[in-house]
Image 1: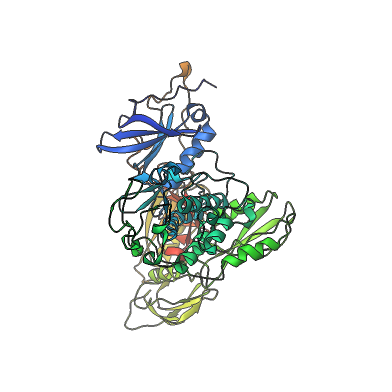
Image 2: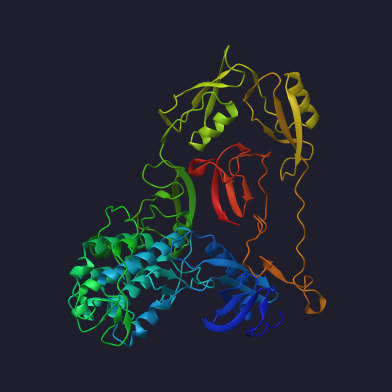
Length: 607
């Protein structure tokens, strides 16, 4: 392998657009620089993979993959990702600079005796956990959250930064839970560094804090990960329970204690009636109103703090139990199972659930709490939503439209009965059983009563001439389209519209898609040409313009692109607009991003 290039110096420009400024941070695997987008004329932050790691294709690929997952994350209070890619030897991520000061700076580096009131400390942690919850749901772990990674703006808004991009695959959401517990301890005590090895209790530093706060911090900072809340979502529920139990800010007395309260509410009295310097000479601001800091409360279930103190503590130290994965995304369930280090395998099945969101784990086999041995297989049953759903009104439309509407509502079995109608053209839906508005069982068929016409035959696998002759013989017209197909031989019909069994008038038209064979895949250029020079002088991956503008949809995806004329069977995978989708059942013509959570396509994540 060639020797890695030296670390970049300020003044270089990535893709002729992003000007690198001074190095402001780093952890040995990445370096963080200030920067400037010369096209948009705006400041940016640039995270560069260290040269020796960037020279490793596997590490560079992992870095860019996590960067793209972060960019696709729809989470509150998250620094916005502008782009990522490779420019020659430089592998990078470009983000907006976070507004405001880090919590380390706000607290004066832990040296000025400044801390937050419990109410405001919990409100900040609620915002942090809301961001981490979305990340955990897609299998993304921050990895090393500290007060340096939480930024407060002048209005009290929270921004989370510093997601790990290298070497965090072995960490679990419980790693982040521990970090948030330590963060909460720092906010309420002003101590930015705490001793590891024992659960933290803020009342040992600030006497008089409610016992619930001690339990909340101690549960999260328990040295054994098994006894911590399983992820940010579960810990968020507990934090919000305690937050609701605290006195309102006007009832708290923290402002009168010897350790000043950062951001104390103006109604807390004793020298803090308005914004201005406190007795340390540091400017403090009035606390933001509670209504703008606390998000919508998570539904309160059976989770209570006593469960962590009593229930989990009963498990013998040597026993490894299957954790409760209910409500987990498949990605996070796999992370949890891998963290048990028992070489477990896992399979998936679909199941109906009235309580669990579609796509999340509804149950496991064996059940949660079962003691595990190495090498076992775990069945993860994923929710497909409730078994019963309201039947949509499809009368008056075409049969094809009716089938699509029923599939979007979750009904996959459709039967057709032809009836004579003097008023409706052939192929028109007259009614359905169950009727529109009634609850139907998604395991049972919905019967469509359709005005008489010509039943479209199945043409898949026929030759073009044979298929055309069959349609003409039924009095139907033929339209031909061509498309590449990985499995259907050239010249055979790979798709048709409308689908087999549909009813058309005698002069109706059927479009057949004829395979042109597998799609040709261009060979990737070699990484290095003779003399060490890249054949592509730009050496570019990603956006190619400094990463600030997005790639064309699907440009970075491999495999089969979605084709509206191709018929897909259950389990077939395609890419569409930068994401991978898998067919839940036989489908043709419906885009992968249509149909909602009960539609025919299952979103497998970004390419």
